[in-house]
Image 1: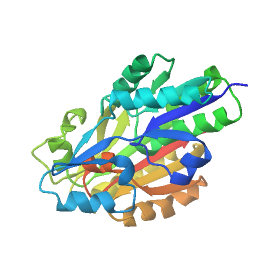
Image 2: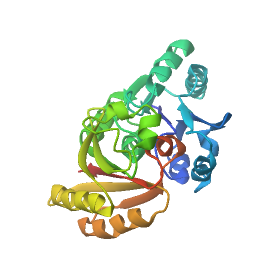
Image 3: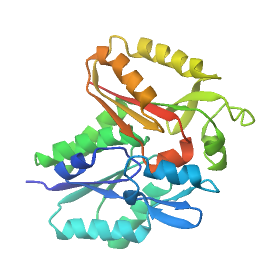
Image 4: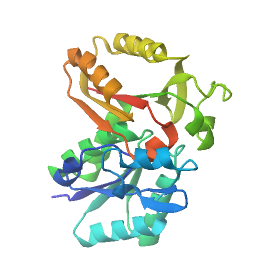
Length: 278
């Protein structure tokens, strides 16, 4: 029987107990806050990173895991009996993590199937969890990879930010096409599609987010939804409001605080709504 092991990075948003239950290996990214380097794995306590970011003199900076860490992880998994490794990571346009994973596999001298999720956060989680569930049944490498590809094609990620300041300072604004960087205080909702952040709605005040949500409800009407993920930075009020309204769709909904990697680039009062279709 195959023993496929699943590896991912800490940009995904997932319940800790699910990582343990499904035997998922998470390689942490790092965040530099005013000269102090933190492992993302040490910043998972609710509100911990947000407080650091609020009180920092400069915008925190994220960094991908070292190549050597990936090499050590892959070597260990094979030594522990893995027949294959599937390593699923955030989009290459957001981070160099996936390239570090590839280099880590080369350094370790082992075969690793490295997959670009084309997403991050809970959309990345969808792929990782489905892969891990299938791997746990003893499925072989090709079946696991096929499932990951299927989930990716049936997922969507929408993100709302209350200010573009973090995206600008973090160098990610170039990924957002068609947004005037001079209008830092506008609210923007984007869809992550083909590795790009594409604006859907722009405006000032809560109306911008409400307008998008109305459009979103029309967009998903009548479609079979497997699960919904809602992530937030700041308070969970808006996320929980969305959850209540989305319950009519009859799909499981997970509301979680996003991690330090995403918070650094979205800023406070951001949210993401992610959908996996049947």
